[in-house]
Length: 78
Image (cartoon, rainbow, N blue to C red; front, side, top):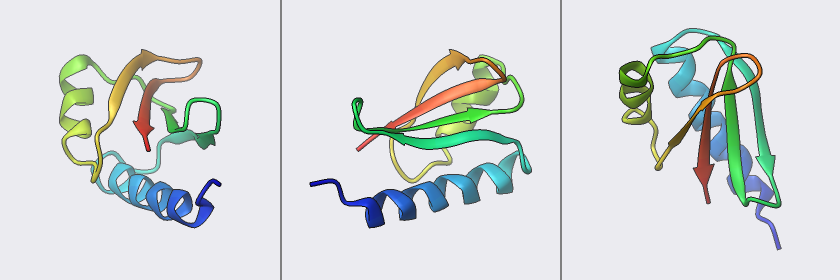
């Protein structure tokens, strides 16, 4: 069974980090049940160094997946 309370808390932590480091630039933040991961897409595109720096700020491992439809994409596997 999926623990949505934990997922929502993790999403709040992710949102807090992004807002503190980059400002409000979240395009999409959702849980993907098939991948068992939280997916984040920004409204801006980061270069590799910026993406790496951002990944270091998150409370759990973040995987930079490149550029999505609007900006940089990240996945957080639970």
